[in-house]
Length: 144
Image (cartoon, rainbow, N blue to C red; front, side, top):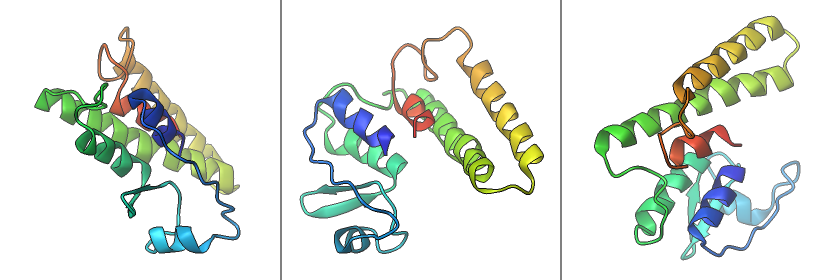
């Protein structure tokens, strides 16, 4: 959810946040995201866009004239940013969720988390951001 808030703020796009009680999901959320019933959901023009990484893609495509772009214009750099965004989503947050929820397999999950964070650190190296010189999609993916 924070990814989307940061992306909207970076682009200077106005929005109205509607907080949801996830233990008692409201009708609007269930109508907007009937498949997963999860947040975030961006309602734009009365239509829902679900899942944070999908929303980030949408913001770049729906508002290409609004800088900064979250994805680089170079196709190879875009693929690189998408790779690290997917890595953060699958490795860091999936592992973090397991650590938060589970007692069994905790040592394994901790080891996986350390490996994932080391991989991110190695990729970052001396660069200011994962995709290079500008804050963008891959960096937003690490935020959640």
